Image 1: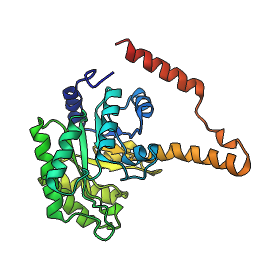
Image 2 (image 1 turned 120 degrees about the vertical axis):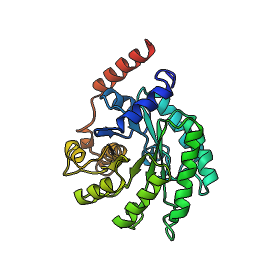
Image 3 (image 1 turned 90 degrees about the vertical axis):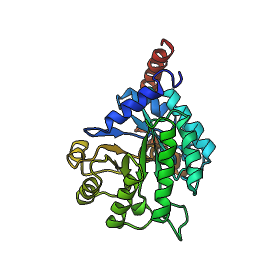
Length: 284
C-alpha cells in the first residue's frame, strides 16, 4: 500500500476538518505495526513521535537525522489510510531558509501536518529569540503555501519543557506563532485546567493541541470541555511499551524470573489482527 490508497489531498482535507470543531485524540505510533494497530482501533488521525522513533533506532530523542525522520514519515504515511501529523522537532535547521527546505521535503512524504518547535537544543540558550522563532515559523508557512497550503502547521512553544515554565511567555510566543502563520498551537508541558484554559482563550479561534504524556485526572471529554481541539500523547505509548520490556528484561537478567511476561499481549491476538489487517490491505 502507498500514499495513493487514500490520496494526500483527501487526508489533508480530512485533517483540516478535524481541527474545525470538537476534540479528537491523535495518538503517536513509532513504527508500522503500532500505526496499523492504532488505525485499527478507529483513531481518525495519527502523529509521529520523534522520541519513540529515535529509541526504536537506538538513538536518543533529538538524535536522529533529517533523512531518518523523512524516511520514517514516508513509511508511516504509506502504511496508513488516516492523516499523519509529523513531529518535525525544530525543522532540522536553525535558519529560516533551512526550515523552509526541510518543510518542503517533509510535505513530499505526504504528511497532513507538521510541527515546528522553538527550542534550540542549547542548554545555555534553550529557546530561539522570539523574532527568530517567528521568522522560522513564517518560513515554514511559506513553504506550505507554495506546496498548496493544505497541510496543517503546528507552532510549538517549548517553554515548559526547557525549564522556563512561564505561562505569560508561553502565551506570548503562541500568539506570535499564530500571527506568523501557525494553524494550530501547542505548548507541551502545561497541565492544570487554569493553564489550559488560559492558552485556549488566548489563541482562539486557533485550535490547541494538548500533550497528555502520563496518567491524567482528566478524561478526553473533560479536556474537550476546556476547549482543546486535539490531544496527543507524544512518546508515552512508546515509553509504556519500553516499560513492560524493561521490567521483563531486568527480572530475567537480575533474578532469573519470567514474571515480567505476566501482562504480555497475546500472540494469538496480535497474529489474528495483523493477518486480518494484511488481508484487507492486499485485497484492495
